[in-house]
Amino acid sequence: MNELQMFQSQVSAFWPLKDAVAKYTFVTQRCKEISTSESMEGEPLSALCSPALVVDVDKVKRNAQRMMERCHQLGVQLRPHMKTHKTLECADIMTGGSRRCIVVSTMAEATFYADHGFDDILYAYSLPFDKVERCAALSERLDLFQVLLDHPDALERLRKRPLKGGRRWHVWLKLDCGNGRAGVLHSEPEALQLARAIAEADGVELTGVYAHCGNTYNCEGVEQIQAVAQETTSFTLQFMEKLKAVGISCRSSIGSTPSCSHPVPDMGKLSEVHPGNYVFYDVQQSVIGSCALEDVAVRVLTRVVGHCPHRNQLLIDCGWTGISLDGAGKLPSGYAMIEGHPDLKLLSMTQEHGRVEPISGPLDCSKYPIGSLLTLIPYHSCAAAAMHPVYHVHSEGRLMGKWTPTRGW
Ligand SMILES: Cc1ncc(COP(=O)(O)O)c(C=O)c1O
Image (cartoon, rainbow, N blue to C red; front, side, top):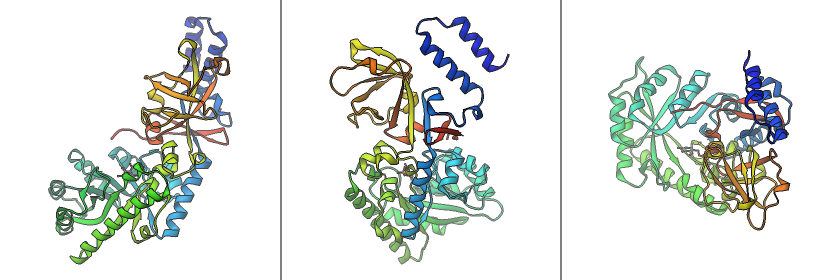
């Protein structure tokens, strides 16, 4: 008995007859999903079991193309970040097929991409000491594997693990230019001291200076985004001048999706930029002003699984395991936007259930039969994508295949 037959027999033996139509629909969809992905090609999105993360490949390509053109016009190298999707297919689209010049945020991503022919990889996470050996292995294997640090102890760790084959560690210094997360504060004398120590250390090369302007996520509108982009760029360029004054030259990189969606001309004086989320975008980016809502390439499909008129609510099959809890309290529509239903709000979620209610007024349950589909536009696509083991890719609503992300750290 194969998986499909086993599932069918389990269903007929144990499935109670109540709500037979909804359950029949569920069973046929589940059967289709089990009976291989190829058989779903060309089918509408409604053929998928929910919750499902669906990716509009045309929008992905358009978002990627626009970023490449923007960087080309600025005269700056684009080093796209892979953290949003973590797939080979999307990485190919973002690199224009070159499979070179990417940023990753985990060693799982670094290894995954290295294993599939990618090179010139920057692991842009302040060097974790438990991963030095894995970094060394990739540095000895790839043409160009680069690490990042913001503390003298991390440099010491690298010095204590010389690379084989006459290779040198390629190191980026992480600067904090106002983001307030990792990095040495750009204005502190320690920043210049650490840059000099990296440049002078045996077996180590100062490859670049990296400042992530995640503080653009506090902005609303292009003007505010560009003010933060300008500030980060200016601080970084000033730091490059200080390096030059002591005879050190290296690359420079700043970026985030908001800043790189609306770059300021001075960003053309940098060597690189490193945005990532732009390939999918999301509701958060549209609220900040990075993109239009129509640029958002991902959705989470969900179905109505319950009517609760006594609470003026619907239940859906998307809990936080389907979209994440990112975005709490940020939108009038709750944790996501419900496409085509501006009157509805995703109020709360438990692991496998979501509660939906009208933003105001009474709910007409008959408009949302059990089993009917709702489409959620995620607040934060990186978080929503991270909840899914597979993404269903479509063009104009017809399924084309699946992308499988890497996971772990
Ligand atoms: C260190 C670092 N670099 C680059 C990026 C990419 O920025 P964005 O997601 O805004 O495109 C991120 C995102 O969190 C990041 O943490």
